Length: 180
Image (tube, rainbow, N blue to C red; front, top):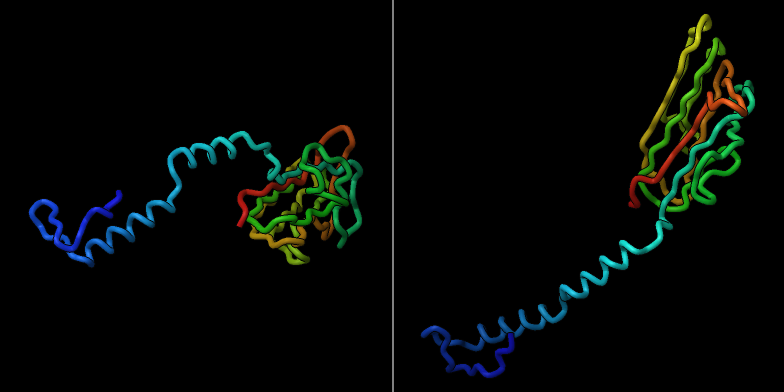
């Protein structure tokens, strides 16, 4: 709205327009010029929807050899799926600050595992079994706020983690929910 034609003695709908009203409208006019237009917003939406999904951060890894080294990081040597660099040497290291979700599961046949998901060497989840006579599945999951370079991994406290190269008995996965 251009109101430069208004003077201090102008009237709108029978009401005299004063200097302060004119200044307020001019300020509003200046602010409106700074707002994005509908075309600007549509252009941004098109750019966002056509951009490649480069911000996906996720992994699914499989343990391929039965692991029995207590008080150690469980080795997940087979990456089933994942974004490049998301999971290396059985440890996830955050490249961006955000909220992430991690999960571990293990079908075991009497190996009575006790595991923890660790965040920077602090346990955030425990899973264990004391059943040694039949098959059972244990699982553990955690949703965490991670800073850049925070680490997450699975640690075996006792027992064994049953693993196989042909059957995914032990799986560890994680993904970024949102940046923060």
